[in-house]
Picture (spheres, rainbow, N blue to C red):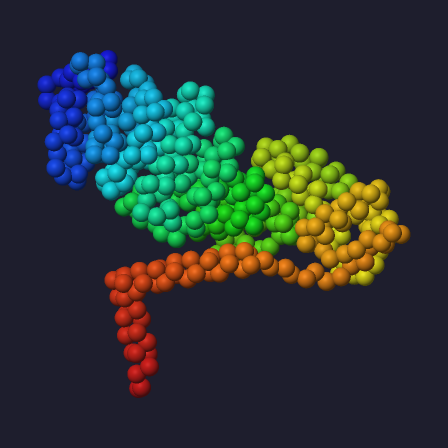
Length: 425
């Protein structure tokens, strides 16, 4: 076994020099991966991998990340989790994540996950978690064949973005919908999907990209489960608040959502807040203050306050469905705001945002009209591109289903069953 960070071993165990020899001379990546997974018992394997050569040379300075991807992957991940070996420098970590060969790395998906967790661990130990972001981003964008494949790296990266409040770096990842899952590509667990979409919703909500945040939270909430996870209930709370901010009301989640989540939310203080919404700010603020400890504990106090700030907007929009004209003072009484100028600012901001179509006359009379939808050429081009991308994704899924032996077997079985039922007596 390795002792005190050297490669010296007791009889019967490979030394670090033996491992390095295999890494540099092996002509088969598959065989090398098998060797690295089994050259020593599990409890001593990573100790050997994390050690330094007898001459004091660090193997990470000798091996090439591109040619020797598997070897560096095993050694670097072991080193990042070691409590006795020196922690690799940030330059070494970033160099590997930007230079590794994805084809080799995909032979050891569990080790890729181990590496990502090690990068986060090392950054937390240095009290500078944000330094992990560039390495994790490169690892995530280069490892899967396409970003549409869900991997364990998605959840790890998004959790780190949220923990460090660096949300914009996640946008290129969040922009690619998850349409593919391959358990051979990544050692996925059920929670990876939940954590990724939950953290993604938080990042998008922090950037006030409400529509996208809603989608991410809904995916988390509605993921099938015999018993819903706690994170799904947390996501449902945030989903409801995001919908209040965006629409002024909540909507029922997909029908396949676990029914206990709906019951839990309805019977909670969130359910009371939702039932009251939208109403005058003073009423909402009184109730929110009463339940502030809970809302703060759930990290939803910010969303609660944004929902309260938007309540006046939704009350004004309701008035447009009933009245053609109203004075600023009348509107103020309906929404619970005494100052005409404050109401004027809210209405002008709603007009600028395209939320209402209205004019304010010199005598402070507001005239409402129907909102005319406006689409720019860029909007139409973007919608067209998205539709084409979704169409390609659906065609790909359809081809994969039609090529599935399991699917074809079930189709034939169903047809035989149908034909037997249609056979005349």
